[in-house]
Length: 199
Image 1: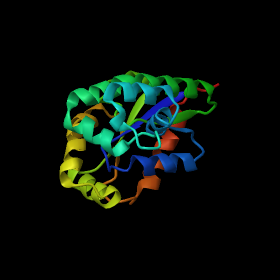
Image 2: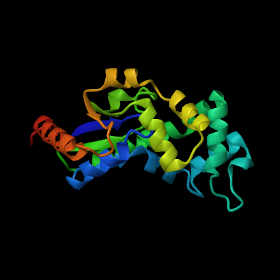
Image 3: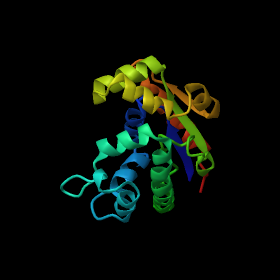
Image 4: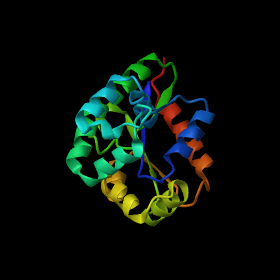
């Protein structure tokens, strides 16, 4: 089965593109969803995160205080590396075990940090959803109501737009919100079907 790694910077529209592939009955595996499941209350990864960062990363209910953890990792790169060392191997293990159970011509694996984690060899093709940085900032402000400073910190922790594009096998230009996206996805869908191994 052909594995398509879907990636892009924050606010570029990865989730929208993933949804359009799902509407074509293509399996979509989302690394962010896996990460959320891994840090649910009672999960071993949450215990390891608490041991690494201290009880302040937990809410009074014992769940992960995501806002506080984000502040920690964006203020200190060592904290970011510690968190990634805990979560990334578990995320990629889960992705691999999920793909092994699928029966489809191809699947979409949505991995925001695919290039940053240097796991590009885990997929057959890289699909980048792209838009200008100013558009990213405006969309994230509208969606998440974060400060300019926080958004810039997130973008700074991702590879540059130029690096992302240089690694891409396929690119979807999402400069205009959802304009022409469905058509772009349909074209890639037909391409991926033609590239899929035939039984």
